[in-house]
Length: 370
Image (cartoon, rainbow, N blue to C red):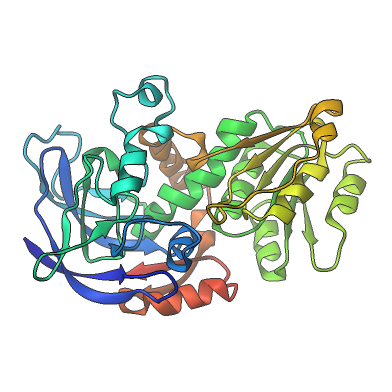
């Protein structure tokens, strides 16, 4: 048993507190990782507010990278002590229907992690001093000095990729870029709309620019984020505070609308806005999360008479063990400027302040350094 400092959430509506917690040794097929960097993602904030529910108390954090310090018994050999790894918040059992059909982000173990607050086997390696119950978040809990995760929730990071880049690549980047690569597919010369210029939305911008989408239109209410979107490849930006988004998108596309729209916020109003911007036969790809009971109205006749589609994309609809190394290769080749996504770096002890900055509209992905 190892004692580590971690950000513990005890109840919704209260800020996380740095506490000393107990971390058990890795079991078969697991690894212990010393965290070097962890991304400040909005998904954790949903759990902090109670918009999303998980077993409490828990250790926050699901976007992390670090160095492997211990292997559990029966290690596969794919990962070695001393390897730098990025952590994945979706498990991959390899034997359920989703995994064997090539859609591991829907692995059945994900539901087990969510329901139990444990690792893929449903049990926790975390506990409070004295033996009190403590849970994992998404099988990762990387707002901590060290973590124990399933070996299949880690991808080796090549030399030259900084830990903060590796961390955000394993969540925001693979989600946003994957939505373009795996859902939109061939985007060359086609209009593409992205609503929301946070970490995931800006990652979609990078993927769309690399794919040759044109015009590449980005919508937000923060001019600083829109400026960054232009820097990452957006050809047109729309400040939704000042402009009728639907009218402007139709103007930019000669009245036709866009064949693909990506909504990276998770709000009913912006989802409907994105749908209204799609062309006949077009598709709205929803990647942003909202509260557990969030719904948005879909006009039936748009679906039928204009043959529009609304689909969801989790984790970029990717196969992370294959796709994340490809994203690292693109970064090292200078084709995926993930560094530009990075925002303020803060010590783990300032986790509550990091989320205050996020909610206040901080530009770029905040990074916690344990």
